[in-house]
Length: 110
Image 1 (cartoon, helix red, strand yellow):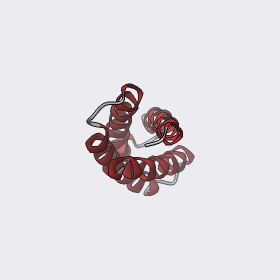
Image 2 (cartoon, helix red, strand yellow; image 1 turned 120 degrees about the vertical axis):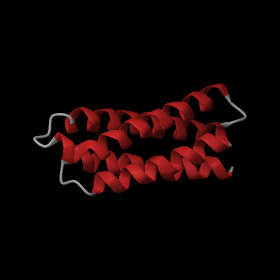
Image 3 (spheres, one colour; image 1 turned 135 degrees about the vertical axis):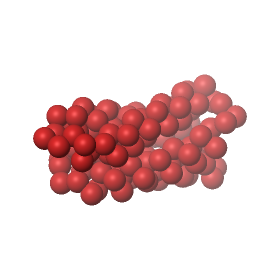
């Protein structure tokens, strides 16, 4: 992996963490929080997976590929859940998750 692709992967992961954290906070303020429970859970899981990949990228871990594969899967699931909801924060999160899933899939296969 080139330094540029590693930097891009890190930037995408950090953007996804931010989008997921913002989505979580906004979901918790929705009128029917129970309806948003799955979205909140996946936002938290996705942000955690992205944090792991970001840390592995920063220190050049040998475990980057399997962590990136997991992150890509969680990001895809989070994007799919967010797309079910008609909220701007969910749409922004879904977009960030899709970008991160693509980057992590590339890192997993590098």
